[in-house]
Structures are given as structure tokens and as C-alpha cells.
Length: 351
Image 1: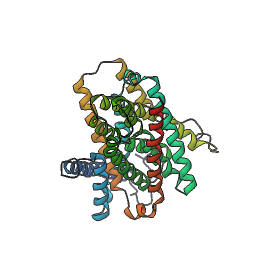
Image 2: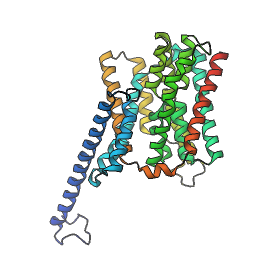
Image 3: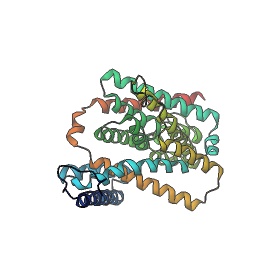
Image 4: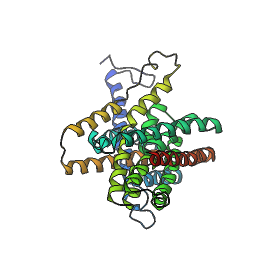
């Protein structure tokens, strides 16, 4: 057993030196289990809280972030749970993003027409560029600005999480971006249906506007179906088309992050495994008829894993760090919200 590594704390006997290794592996495994159990408890609280009066407008993902933050900043997060929390924050979130591909087919994208796809793509690109540029001008940290831009232009919390895999921002930045996007997405969900008559929007055009501009998938569905079945279906397809654009956006951000790097390995074009898997799942879902029950089960699994991942982020968020960001990022998120609403509405009216 002489091949075992020796350290200053090891016993001379090589066989005995294996025991700390075994104990460390057991401790790591126990920490992962403990962390996942804690994350699952926070997730359960989020799902239960959603049934309370006044909280039904918020998705479990958002409530999980808040519950995780309250727990960690009031009670403190156990050190031995860190490994499991990190597992939920990274592995579960990435797998959940892959499962989102089962909500989209190429046929659904074709359903809103070439013009609809063009409106969605133009709105996404313009909003992202506008938000990142404005963030630079008003002094918001570049990584935080990218997270806010992704959440506003693509698909809310899911896009923020996926974008952070290549931007590698701090957990507090992710939490801040999720909170800001949730705030203005909720305002859009409640306010946009009231504006439809004012702007003279029919069900199809309203659905296209809602799907191209509102942040979260759940918020889009809530706003769309308030104005009728056609509006809801159109909004959902338009929104899922934005979700499909998550993959190329993440790749583009990875290229931007590596531009000018002197590290040859870092300069290689990034291809995160979850992006490839997401595209593959969309293709599979387009070619193979998957039973509705399976679709429902996969959608629920994706939502639970996303909620667990965001609960893990909340558990690692420091409220004092969030306060240190100040109001500028919030102003950036608000301005981006106004921009995407106005820009997409202009395109819809001109189409």
C-alpha cells in the first residue's frame, strides 16, 4: 500500500493512512446528502408558501430564493452542507435547463411565422445589447449587467443561471439579478393585459408582444391567457422561441468572455455540455412523439430542479453583499424592462 500519498499528519503505516481518506470521502458524501436535504426543505417551503394568499403570483423558484436567503442570513448555513448546496446550484440547475428543451419543438416555432420569430430575435438582441451598454455607462459591474440583460431578454431566472455558467459572476449577483427580473416581470404580467385595449392589440398581436417581452415563462402564460386562449397559446410559443435562443446566446457570451485571453485553452470556443444537450432535446422533441404524461412529468421535474438550484443560491447569498450593489443595478433592470416592452411593441405594431 506504499502508493498511498503521505502527509505530515499521516501515520507511518501506509495502511492506516487510508483511513483519513476513507473518512474524508464519507464526510464529503454525508455533506452532499445533508446539503441536498436542506435544499429540498427550502424547496418544499417555497411550494407550500405559494398557496398562501398574496403569494400566488410568485413562482416557487422566486420564493425559494427568498426562503434560502432568510434561512442563511438568520440561522446560518451549516458548513458541512456546502457540498450538497453546491451540487444543487450547479449540477441540478444545468440538468434542469436541458429538460426545458422538452417544452419546445421546431413546429411550435414555425407556428408564429417567420415574422414572429424575427420580432422575437430582434427584441432579444436589441435588449441584450442595450442593457449591457447602459450598464457600462452607469457603472454597473459588467458580469451583473450581463445577468440582468440575459434575464430580461431571454427567459428570466433560467437564463440568468445559464448565463452565469460562462460569466462566472458572484452568487450575490445572481440573486440580485433574479430578484430584479422577478419584480419587473411580475409588473408586466399584471399590467400588460390592461394595456392591450389601449394599444389596440388583438389576441394574436398581444400574445406575440407578451411572449417577446415578459421575462419568465410562467409570467408570460399568466399574462397571455388573461386575454384569451389564442393570446395565451401565441404568447407561450413566442416565449419558448426565446428560450430556444438561450443556447446560441450562452455560446456567444462564452466567446466574448474569452476574447483577448492569453490562455490558449481558455481562448477555445466554449461549448457547455448543457447547451449541446438542450439543442439535442429540442430536436428529439421535434422528431419523436412523446406522450403528454411524460411531458408533464418532465416539466414538473425541471421546475423542481430549477427551484432547488435557486434555493441553493439563496442559501449562499449574503444580504449585506446585495445591499452593497446599491440602486444602479435596479435602475438598469427597470430601464431594460421599459426598453424591451417598448421595442417589442413597436415591432408588433409595425408587422
